[in-house]
Image (cartoon, rainbow, N blue to C red; front, top):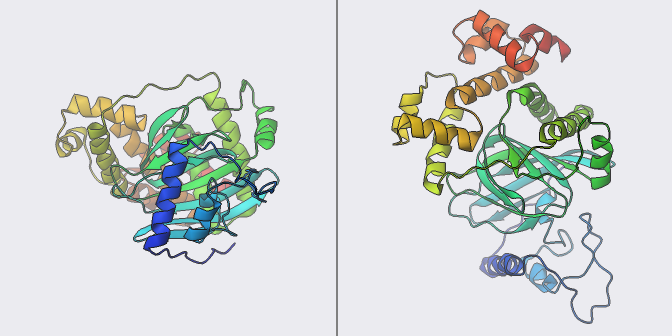
Length: 356
Protein backbone atom coordinates (compact mmCIF):
# COMPACT_ATOMS: atom_id res chain seq x y z
CA UNK A 1 0.00 0.00 0.00
CA UNK A 2 1.21 3.48 -0.74
CA UNK A 3 1.96 6.19 1.75
CA UNK A 4 -0.23 9.22 2.31
CA UNK A 5 1.28 12.56 1.27
CA UNK A 6 3.70 14.21 3.67
CA UNK A 7 1.93 16.56 6.06
CA UNK A 8 3.75 19.87 6.48
CA UNK A 9 2.72 21.95 9.47
CA UNK A 10 3.40 25.64 9.95
CA UNK A 11 4.05 27.19 13.36
CA UNK A 12 0.37 27.72 14.16
CA UNK A 13 -0.42 24.10 13.38
CA UNK A 14 2.53 22.84 15.39
CA UNK A 15 1.35 24.95 18.33
CA UNK A 16 -2.14 23.50 17.97
CA UNK A 17 -0.79 19.98 17.89
CA UNK A 18 1.37 20.62 20.96
CA UNK A 19 -1.68 21.97 22.76
CA UNK A 20 -3.62 18.88 21.73
CA UNK A 21 -1.00 16.49 23.08
CA UNK A 22 -0.58 18.45 26.32
CA UNK A 23 -4.36 18.49 26.74
CA UNK A 24 -4.48 14.75 26.20
CA UNK A 25 -1.75 14.13 28.76
CA UNK A 26 -3.30 16.41 31.35
CA UNK A 27 -6.70 14.81 30.97
CA UNK A 28 -5.19 11.34 30.88
CA UNK A 29 -7.21 10.75 27.77
CA UNK A 30 -10.56 11.15 29.56
CA UNK A 31 -12.60 12.40 26.64
CA UNK A 32 -16.07 13.91 26.47
CA UNK A 33 -18.29 14.80 23.53
CA UNK A 34 -18.48 18.39 22.41
CA UNK A 35 -21.57 20.04 23.84
CA UNK A 36 -24.47 20.24 21.42
CA UNK A 37 -22.71 18.19 18.76
CA UNK A 38 -25.57 15.70 18.48
CA UNK A 39 -23.16 13.30 16.81
CA UNK A 40 -22.73 9.65 17.65
CA UNK A 41 -19.06 9.57 16.80
CA UNK A 42 -16.35 9.24 14.18
CA UNK A 43 -16.01 6.26 11.83
CA UNK A 44 -12.60 5.45 13.32
CA UNK A 45 -11.04 2.02 13.11
CA UNK A 46 -9.73 2.25 16.67
CA UNK A 47 -13.31 2.20 17.98
CA UNK A 48 -13.29 5.66 19.55
CA UNK A 49 -16.91 6.76 19.26
CA UNK A 50 -17.59 10.19 20.79
CA UNK A 51 -16.84 13.48 19.07
CA UNK A 52 -14.08 15.11 21.06
CA UNK A 53 -14.13 18.68 22.22
CA UNK A 54 -10.65 19.07 20.74
CA UNK A 55 -11.78 18.29 17.18
CA UNK A 56 -11.29 21.96 16.39
CA UNK A 57 -7.62 21.56 17.25
CA UNK A 58 -7.35 18.67 14.82
CA UNK A 59 -8.88 20.91 12.15
CA UNK A 60 -6.20 23.52 12.88
CA UNK A 61 -3.45 20.90 12.61
CA UNK A 62 -4.86 19.77 9.28
CA UNK A 63 -5.52 16.15 10.24
CA UNK A 64 -9.32 16.26 10.42
CA UNK A 65 -10.96 14.08 7.80
CA UNK A 66 -7.92 11.84 7.47
CA UNK A 67 -6.66 10.91 10.93
CA UNK A 68 -9.72 12.09 12.82
CA UNK A 69 -8.95 10.25 16.04
CA UNK A 70 -6.01 11.63 18.08
CA UNK A 71 -5.53 8.21 19.66
CA UNK A 72 -4.68 6.38 16.45
CA UNK A 73 -3.24 9.03 14.12
CA UNK A 74 0.15 7.30 14.27
CA UNK A 75 -1.27 4.01 13.03
CA UNK A 76 -2.23 5.25 9.56
CA UNK A 77 -0.21 4.92 6.36
CA UNK A 78 1.51 8.26 6.38
CA UNK A 79 4.64 10.22 7.04
CA UNK A 80 4.11 12.85 9.73
CA UNK A 81 6.66 15.64 9.86
CA UNK A 82 7.25 18.60 12.13
CA UNK A 83 10.53 20.35 11.41
CA UNK A 84 13.11 17.56 11.27
CA UNK A 85 10.94 14.97 13.01
CA UNK A 86 9.45 12.15 10.95
CA UNK A 87 7.41 9.05 11.62
CA UNK A 88 6.90 6.77 8.65
CA UNK A 89 4.28 4.04 8.97
CA UNK A 90 3.30 1.66 6.18
CA UNK A 91 0.78 -1.17 6.30
CA UNK A 92 2.45 -4.29 4.91
CA UNK A 93 -0.37 -6.80 5.28
CA UNK A 94 -3.70 -7.16 7.02
CA UNK A 95 -6.65 -9.48 7.41
CA UNK A 96 -9.66 -10.07 9.66
CA UNK A 97 -8.42 -9.31 13.16
CA UNK A 98 -4.74 -8.67 12.40
CA UNK A 99 -2.39 -6.27 10.63
CA UNK A 100 1.35 -5.69 10.24
CA UNK A 101 3.01 -2.28 9.88
CA UNK A 102 6.57 -1.17 9.20
CA UNK A 103 7.27 1.74 11.57
CA UNK A 104 10.36 3.92 11.07
CA UNK A 105 10.93 6.81 13.49
CA UNK A 106 13.71 9.39 13.60
CA UNK A 107 12.59 11.20 16.77
CA UNK A 108 15.47 12.03 19.08
CA UNK A 109 16.32 13.33 22.56
CA UNK A 110 15.11 16.84 21.70
CA UNK A 111 11.64 15.71 20.61
CA UNK A 112 9.01 15.50 23.33
CA UNK A 113 6.88 12.38 23.73
CA UNK A 114 3.11 12.39 24.10
CA UNK A 115 0.40 10.09 25.36
CA UNK A 116 -1.08 7.61 22.91
CA UNK A 117 -3.38 4.61 23.20
CA UNK A 118 -3.18 1.10 21.82
CA UNK A 119 -6.30 0.50 19.75
CA UNK A 120 -5.56 -3.24 19.62
CA UNK A 121 -3.22 -5.76 21.23
CA UNK A 122 0.29 -4.91 20.03
CA UNK A 123 3.46 -6.97 19.70
CA UNK A 124 6.27 -5.01 18.05
CA UNK A 125 9.76 -6.49 17.55
CA UNK A 126 12.46 -3.80 17.47
CA UNK A 127 14.64 -4.18 14.38
CA UNK A 128 16.92 -1.14 14.74
CA UNK A 129 17.68 1.61 17.24
CA UNK A 130 16.36 1.92 20.76
CA UNK A 131 13.76 3.86 22.72
CA UNK A 132 12.03 4.13 26.08
CA UNK A 133 8.50 2.74 26.35
CA UNK A 134 6.17 3.55 29.24
CA UNK A 135 2.77 2.04 29.73
CA UNK A 136 0.26 1.44 32.49
CA UNK A 137 1.84 -1.90 33.45
CA UNK A 138 5.45 -0.68 33.56
CA UNK A 139 8.34 0.69 31.55
CA UNK A 140 11.15 -0.75 29.44
CA UNK A 141 14.12 0.33 27.37
CA UNK A 142 13.71 -1.51 24.08
CA UNK A 143 16.68 -2.49 21.91
CA UNK A 144 17.02 -4.60 18.74
CA UNK A 145 15.48 -8.00 19.37
CA UNK A 146 13.22 -6.70 22.16
CA UNK A 147 9.44 -6.95 21.91
CA UNK A 148 7.13 -4.05 22.73
CA UNK A 149 3.93 -5.36 24.31
CA UNK A 150 0.70 -3.38 24.46
CA UNK A 151 -2.80 -4.16 25.69
CA UNK A 152 -5.82 -2.96 23.73
CA UNK A 153 -7.10 0.28 25.23
CA UNK A 154 -4.02 1.00 27.36
CA UNK A 155 -2.23 4.36 27.23
CA UNK A 156 1.49 4.62 26.56
CA UNK A 157 4.40 6.91 25.70
CA UNK A 158 7.49 6.30 23.58
CA UNK A 159 10.57 8.50 23.99
CA UNK A 160 14.09 8.69 22.62
CA UNK A 161 15.88 10.08 25.65
CA UNK A 162 19.33 8.67 24.85
CA UNK A 163 19.66 8.38 21.08
CA UNK A 164 17.79 9.06 17.86
CA UNK A 165 15.61 6.80 15.77
CA UNK A 166 14.29 3.26 15.67
CA UNK A 167 12.53 0.81 13.38
CA UNK A 168 9.89 -1.69 14.47
CA UNK A 169 7.66 -4.27 12.84
CA UNK A 170 4.31 -3.69 14.53
CA UNK A 171 1.88 -6.62 14.73
CA UNK A 172 -1.64 -5.61 15.81
CA UNK A 173 -4.40 -8.00 16.85
CA UNK A 174 -8.07 -7.37 17.53
CA UNK A 175 -8.85 -8.59 21.09
CA UNK A 176 -11.22 -11.35 19.91
CA UNK A 177 -8.68 -12.62 17.37
CA UNK A 178 -5.90 -12.57 19.96
CA UNK A 179 -8.12 -14.55 22.34
CA UNK A 180 -8.71 -17.14 19.63
CA UNK A 181 -4.93 -17.60 19.31
CA UNK A 182 -4.51 -17.85 23.08
CA UNK A 183 -7.16 -20.57 23.23
CA UNK A 184 -4.79 -22.87 21.38
CA UNK A 185 -1.63 -22.03 23.35
CA UNK A 186 -0.84 -24.45 26.20
CA UNK A 187 -0.54 -22.66 29.54
CA UNK A 188 -1.87 -19.31 28.28
CA UNK A 189 -4.29 -18.25 31.02
CA UNK A 190 -4.49 -14.55 30.18
CA UNK A 191 -4.64 -12.45 27.06
CA UNK A 192 -3.40 -9.22 28.65
CA UNK A 193 0.26 -8.46 29.25
CA UNK A 194 1.57 -7.71 32.74
CA UNK A 195 4.85 -6.19 31.56
CA UNK A 196 5.80 -3.56 29.02
CA UNK A 197 8.13 -5.67 26.91
CA UNK A 198 10.32 -8.73 26.54
CA UNK A 199 14.12 -8.61 26.19
CA UNK A 200 15.93 -10.20 23.24
CA UNK A 201 15.76 -13.98 23.37
CA UNK A 202 17.61 -16.56 21.33
CA UNK A 203 14.44 -18.60 20.87
CA UNK A 204 13.01 -15.90 18.59
CA UNK A 205 16.06 -15.20 16.41
CA UNK A 206 14.84 -17.34 13.53
CA UNK A 207 11.25 -16.07 13.69
CA UNK A 208 12.26 -12.40 13.81
CA UNK A 209 14.73 -12.89 10.95
CA UNK A 210 11.91 -14.45 8.91
CA UNK A 211 9.70 -11.47 9.78
CA UNK A 212 12.27 -8.94 8.54
CA UNK A 213 12.79 -10.86 5.30
CA UNK A 214 9.01 -11.00 4.75
CA UNK A 215 8.86 -7.26 5.49
CA UNK A 216 11.50 -6.46 2.89
CA UNK A 217 9.88 -8.74 0.31
CA UNK A 218 6.36 -7.47 1.09
CA UNK A 219 5.28 -11.09 1.51
CA UNK A 220 1.76 -10.80 2.93
CA UNK A 221 1.15 -14.54 3.13
CA UNK A 222 4.34 -15.07 5.13
CA UNK A 223 3.54 -12.15 7.44
CA UNK A 224 0.10 -13.59 8.18
CA UNK A 225 1.69 -16.85 9.33
CA UNK A 226 4.45 -15.05 11.23
CA UNK A 227 1.86 -12.91 13.05
CA UNK A 228 0.16 -16.00 14.43
CA UNK A 229 3.45 -17.72 15.30
CA UNK A 230 4.73 -14.60 17.07
CA UNK A 231 1.52 -14.17 19.05
CA UNK A 232 1.64 -17.81 20.15
CA UNK A 233 5.31 -17.59 21.11
CA UNK A 234 4.75 -14.44 23.18
CA UNK A 235 1.74 -15.97 24.94
CA UNK A 236 3.84 -19.00 25.90
CA UNK A 237 6.74 -16.84 27.07
CA UNK A 238 4.53 -14.58 29.19
CA UNK A 239 2.34 -17.30 30.73
CA UNK A 240 2.34 -16.75 34.52
CA UNK A 241 5.38 -14.47 34.20
CA UNK A 242 5.63 -11.65 36.72
CA UNK A 243 6.67 -8.16 35.70
CA UNK A 244 10.47 -7.76 35.67
CA UNK A 245 12.04 -5.37 38.14
CA UNK A 246 14.59 -3.13 36.42
CA UNK A 247 15.83 -0.05 38.15
CA UNK A 248 18.93 1.34 36.41
CA UNK A 249 19.31 5.10 36.60
CA UNK A 250 18.55 7.26 33.57
CA UNK A 251 22.27 8.07 33.31
CA UNK A 252 23.23 4.39 33.28
CA UNK A 253 20.47 3.61 30.78
CA UNK A 254 21.89 6.26 28.48
CA UNK A 255 25.39 4.78 28.68
CA UNK A 256 24.13 1.23 28.06
CA UNK A 257 22.06 2.42 25.11
CA UNK A 258 25.19 3.89 23.54
CA UNK A 259 27.01 0.60 24.07
CA UNK A 260 24.17 -1.32 22.43
CA UNK A 261 24.26 0.98 19.42
CA UNK A 262 28.01 0.53 19.24
CA UNK A 263 27.50 -3.24 19.07
CA UNK A 264 24.72 -2.92 16.49
CA UNK A 265 26.97 -0.79 14.27
CA UNK A 266 29.75 -3.41 14.20
CA UNK A 267 28.69 -6.76 15.71
CA UNK A 268 31.30 -8.63 13.67
CA UNK A 269 34.17 -6.72 15.28
CA UNK A 270 36.23 -7.65 18.32
CA UNK A 271 34.29 -6.06 21.16
CA UNK A 272 35.18 -7.09 24.69
CA UNK A 273 33.52 -6.42 28.01
CA UNK A 274 36.38 -4.31 29.38
CA UNK A 275 36.54 -2.12 26.25
CA UNK A 276 32.79 -1.51 26.33
CA UNK A 277 32.92 -0.70 30.04
CA UNK A 278 35.78 1.78 29.52
CA UNK A 279 33.88 3.54 26.73
CA UNK A 280 30.85 3.77 29.04
CA UNK A 281 33.02 5.06 31.93
CA UNK A 282 31.74 2.24 34.15
CA UNK A 283 33.43 -0.54 36.06
CA UNK A 284 33.22 -3.89 34.25
CA UNK A 285 31.02 -5.42 36.96
CA UNK A 286 28.63 -2.47 37.10
CA UNK A 287 28.50 -2.34 33.29
CA UNK A 288 27.79 -6.07 33.06
CA UNK A 289 25.03 -5.93 35.68
CA UNK A 290 23.38 -2.81 34.21
CA UNK A 291 23.66 -4.08 30.64
CA UNK A 292 21.78 -7.21 31.65
CA UNK A 293 19.10 -5.15 33.40
CA UNK A 294 18.54 -3.03 30.29
CA UNK A 295 19.02 -5.56 27.46
CA UNK A 296 17.92 -8.74 29.23
CA UNK A 297 21.21 -10.54 28.49
CA UNK A 298 24.95 -10.03 28.93
CA UNK A 299 27.06 -8.10 26.37
CA UNK A 300 28.58 -11.32 25.01
CA UNK A 301 25.15 -12.92 24.66
CA UNK A 302 23.84 -9.81 22.93
CA UNK A 303 26.77 -9.75 20.48
CA UNK A 304 26.20 -13.43 19.69
CA UNK A 305 22.47 -12.84 19.36
CA UNK A 306 23.04 -9.97 16.91
CA UNK A 307 25.54 -11.92 14.84
CA UNK A 308 23.25 -14.95 14.55
CA UNK A 309 20.25 -12.77 13.70
CA UNK A 310 22.11 -11.12 10.82
CA UNK A 311 23.48 -14.49 9.66
CA UNK A 312 19.95 -15.93 9.66
CA UNK A 313 18.76 -13.06 7.47
CA UNK A 314 21.62 -13.62 5.00
CA UNK A 315 20.84 -17.32 4.84
CA UNK A 316 17.29 -16.45 3.78
CA UNK A 317 18.14 -13.58 1.42
CA UNK A 318 21.35 -14.62 -0.32
CA UNK A 319 22.89 -17.66 -2.02
CA UNK A 320 26.34 -17.02 -0.54
CA UNK A 321 28.16 -20.05 0.85
CA UNK A 322 27.46 -20.67 4.52
CA UNK A 323 31.15 -20.30 5.32
CA UNK A 324 31.22 -16.79 3.83
CA UNK A 325 28.10 -15.80 5.79
CA UNK A 326 29.68 -17.14 8.99
CA UNK A 327 32.89 -15.15 8.50
CA UNK A 328 31.00 -11.95 7.60
CA UNK A 329 28.94 -12.35 10.76
CA UNK A 330 32.09 -12.36 12.89
CA UNK A 331 32.65 -16.08 13.48
CA UNK A 332 36.25 -17.19 13.08
CA UNK A 333 35.48 -20.73 11.93
CA UNK A 334 32.57 -22.59 10.39
CA UNK A 335 32.41 -25.27 13.10
CA UNK A 336 31.82 -22.67 15.84
CA UNK A 337 29.15 -20.96 13.74
CA UNK A 338 27.34 -24.23 13.03
CA UNK A 339 27.46 -25.29 16.69
CA UNK A 340 26.15 -22.01 18.07
CA UNK A 341 23.54 -21.63 15.35
CA UNK A 342 22.17 -25.09 16.07
CA UNK A 343 22.23 -24.60 19.86
CA UNK A 344 20.48 -21.22 19.87
CA UNK A 345 18.15 -21.51 16.86
CA UNK A 346 17.47 -25.22 17.04
CA UNK A 347 18.55 -26.30 13.57
CA UNK A 348 21.61 -26.26 11.34
CA UNK A 349 22.28 -23.33 8.99
CA UNK A 350 21.80 -25.55 5.92
CA UNK A 351 18.46 -26.86 7.18
CA UNK A 352 17.34 -23.36 8.10
CA UNK A 353 18.17 -22.14 4.59
CA UNK A 354 16.43 -25.12 2.96
CA UNK A 355 13.17 -24.44 4.86
CA UNK A 356 12.92 -21.03 3.16
